[in-house]
Each structure stands twice: as structure tokens, then as C-alpha cells.
Length: 350
Image (cartoon, rainbow, N blue to C red; front, side):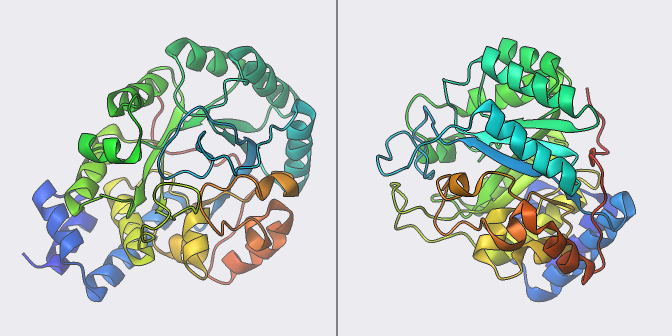
């Protein structure tokens, strides 16, 4: 079966066999890519209309106990300029974001042991008390079931934990000994069991990744059905072991956005900062390929220049929360609007 016929089946049935997904990826061509783009955009609009949901990203610590080979804030990076935002600084970010129209705050950081359950729960509780109509999303890595439970009780409703790869061999290539794919997957299942809206995702083009690995990622996503899927191209960082590896493909990332939208019509799908860093107008291209979420940066300007997961990260212009009107204008030109909304996923929560 040719790739266009496979794409037509994917658009109709919202699934393919693994071998068919592999063929779709390996033999993709511009005609098939454009067909999938149109179908993904139509599907996203059928689920969410022409609305693009915004999340206010607060990168509150770049300390991390892990040493992931691809990440610029890995603990071995002696050149990283470390920081932690105070509770007051974080709440000031929320104050600014709320005034701008944000109704979801994403607290993202490295796995920083200083932020104990007590400190993090107090922070989440303060945000929820100040802004009860807002959602609090956490992206702080692997924690214990009890920690996730306490954070949920404190008021966190969503949790982002990218699985990075669903292939054991590939996971070991990206992470040092002591980090286990099984633990990452167990965390994702625990979060779902506790009633979080859960986000998973992976890098496109990370070192050692094969087309078969991507198919395993797609199969995992289809079976797990996360409320949000965050994918973006691998981007090298100069102070990591992968400093000389080629960046991931923007074309393949956009193709996979369309495939994921058709596999999971109801999921929330961000056009990531990494995609915007790699491609001119990457954010808008992502929306046109089926994405429906963007995450402008609410962090203090000084912090943005220190939270460097990869080189040349965008942190200004329409990527910055204070330039929200610029973002509204750029999305308006392609037929989309930004509502003042929490923007919940249509996938059911456990």
C-alpha cells in the first residue's frame, strides 16, 4: 500500500498497524505530508475549534540531580548558571500572567531536591488559593507516589513527564546508569491513577533514534492516551556529550505532529519552543499541522537566559508572555484565536 493510501486510512480509522506506521514514516513524501497536515488541522478544529490554548511557563529552578546526556542543565554541567526562584518571584510571575489572560501556570524545573514535597506543596497551594480559576501544571520529573499524591491534594491538576523514548535500548543511550525507562513509565501510570491530566512526549531525532523507535513511541502514546503530547526536535547543547550531534528534523517533527493528532484526535498538542527555535515560524507551522497549545514564557527575563536545555533557545518575541499580543496577531493571521481559558483536554481523566 502506498503512503497516501496509508495516510487516508489513518485519517479515517485513527490507527495503523506498527508495520504500516513504519512504512508511513520511512517512505513519506511531500504529497502524503500535505494530506496529513490538512487532515490533522481539520481534526484539531473539529475537537477544539479555532482556539489555541496558552500556558504560562515558569522555569523556576535549573538545578537538577540527573545527568541526562542531552540536557544543558544536567548536574555535570559546570558552566550552567544555577538559580532558584523564590516563592515571591514565582507568585509575581503568576500575577503578571493572570493579568495577561493566562489561566494555566506550568511550573517546570530540573529534579531539584531543594524543592521538597513541603515546599512544592506550599507553592502549589498558594497559587491555587490566589487563583482558584486557574490550573496548575507541574513538570518536575520523577517523584514517589506519595509525593504525587500530596501535590495533587495541594491543588496540582496536571503533570508533564516526557517519556523521551519507549525503547529500552534507546533510553540507555540517552541517560546515565541509574535512570530506568521502567521507572519513568511507572511514574506516568501512577500520575494517571491519581487523577492527574498527564502529558507525555519525546524528542524527534535524538541520538541513536531509529524509525522503529518512533513507531514504539507512537504505539505507546496510542495505548496510554495522554491528555497532552509534547514533542519537539532534538537540539544539541554545547555543554553536553551530544554537543556534536546533528539537530533533529523540523520536517519530521511536523509530520509526526500530524500523525499524533490523527492517532489521538482529542489530545492537547503543543507547538513547542524547540520547534520554534529550529524553524522560522515553527510555532505557526505546528498549529497548521494539528497542534493547539503554545507555552509562552512567564519566567523573569534573567532566568530565561539560564534555563538552557539546548542552544539558541527562544525566550523573547512571541515566545515571551509579555508579547502575548504579538502572538495573538501571528495566530490571527492563520485563522486562530487565543481564549481566556484553562483549556482542558477532552480525554477523560481517571
